[in-house]
Image 1 (cartoon, rainbow over the protein chains, first blue to last red):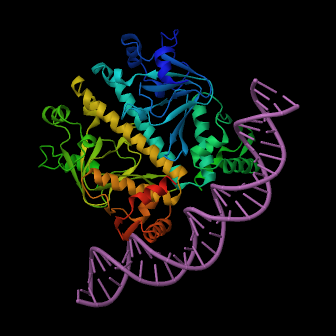
Image 2: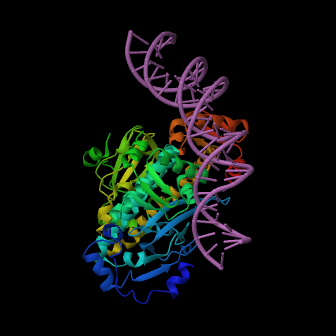
Length: 245
Length: 245
DNA sequence: CGGCATCTTGAGTTGGGTCAATGGTCGTGG
DNA sequence: CCACGACCATTGACCCAACTCAAGATGCCG
C-alpha cells in the first residue's frame, strides 16, 4: 500500500487529536509544550495517521513528497538503490523517530520506506509548518535539530561502514538497538529483531552468511543468546570492548 | 587557527558586501534574489569572511556552534572520530557548498573541519535566520533543502561504503569530483586533488596502499593518467561502466 | 502435508589489509 | 647551493576476513 493513496483516502477518522503517548521519547517525536498545542489547536496539523501492514510502503523512490513521517508504533526500514539494482538499507526507524527528509530537496523521495511489522506513522506536513509564521519558530528549530541529528547519525553509519570490522559493526548495531529500546522503556537486554539477517547485512555492509556466522560466534563467546529473532544480550561490556578494540 | 577566535576577532574588514561571484553554483551557496538582498541589506548577515590557511580548522570536535559555513574558495575536509582514535573523513566541501550542520542538535560540533588548501569561508548565522520572521520563509526553506541534500549525499556515501568494491568506490569518487568541478566551470577531465591518498582512503574506507594500487591499475587500463595529484580522466565511460558493472 | 522463505554451517577463493622497502617532493637551515 | 629530514606515494610479498558456492536445517503458512 502506498502513502500517496493513503494520504488522500485513508486518513484515520478517529485521529482528530494527537496521541503522542506511544512514543516516550517526546523530545524526538515532537517538541514539548506550546508548539505541540499550536500544531493541534490552531492548524490541526499532524493528525493524519497512516496504518501500515508489514511490507507496506510509506513512500517509494520517486514518490511525491507530502511531508515527514513520525513513527507512532512499529518498525520502518529505509532502502536506497544503486543504478545496477543493488539495494542498501540506510536506516531503521522506530517509535518516536522521524524519517523522510530525503524528499525535501526535489519534492520527490529518493528512497523507499517499508514497514517491517504492522506500524502506525503520522504525516507531518513540513510545508505548512514552514508557512506558519513567527509563532512556529520554536517548532521549526526543532526540525532543524531533527535533520542535524539525522546527519550526525549518518556520520556514525559511515564510520561503521568505513572503518570498522564486521564483528565491530554487528556489536555496534546491537548496542544501538539496545539503547533505543531502553530509551523507550523496554528492556535493553532482550531484543526482538524485526528485520531479517539479510536486512541486517544490507545495513551493515555484509552478506547474510557473515551476519549469521557472527551471531554464532558471539553466542559461542557468551556475549549473546541467539534464538532466531530473539536476541538476549548477556555481556554488554564485552560488546562495548569489541568496538573500542 | 580556530573559528571561535576568528569569528570574534578576525572578521574581514573589507567584507561589507557579499561577493558571491566566486561560487558559480549560487543555487547551492545562497538563494537567488530577494532573500539574498534581505540578508545583506536588512540584517547585514553573512558578511563574516574567514580566511584560512591550509591546515587551519574552521571548527573542531566540541566547538560551540556559531552557524553554518559556506565555502567561498578552497577545499575543506570533515573528519569524524571513533572512541579509540580512529578517524574517518565523512566529506569534502568545495566552493558554493555548505557544511557544519552537525552543530545544530546540541549547539556543539561533533566533528572537525580542516582546510586542505588556503580557503575562504563565510559564516551563516542560522539562528538569526530562524528568528527573522515571515519574510525569511523562502530562505529558511532553502536551508531545509540544503540539509536534505546533505542527507541524500550521505546515503550515497553509505551505499558506496556498504555495497561497492574498492574499484567502484574510487571510480565513483573521481566521477563525483569531476562533476562538481564541471558544475563550477572547470574542466571535468583534469582534476587536481587537494587531498592525500591517505585522505581519499579514509573517505572511501580503504588503506592508502589500496588507493595507490587502484590509481596504478586505472592508469594501466587507460582510464586515467596519474601524475601525483594531477589526475586526467581519459575514459569517463569506462569509469562509469565500472560502477554499473 | 508441501512449498517457500529464512537461517546455519562448511569448504574454497579472493579482495584488500599488513608489513616492509624504496623513491619522490618539498621546505628549512647551514 | 646542497643536505637533511619530514611527508607522501608506490610496489612487492604475504595473510586473513569476508565473499561465493553449496548443502541442509528450521520454521511458517496455506
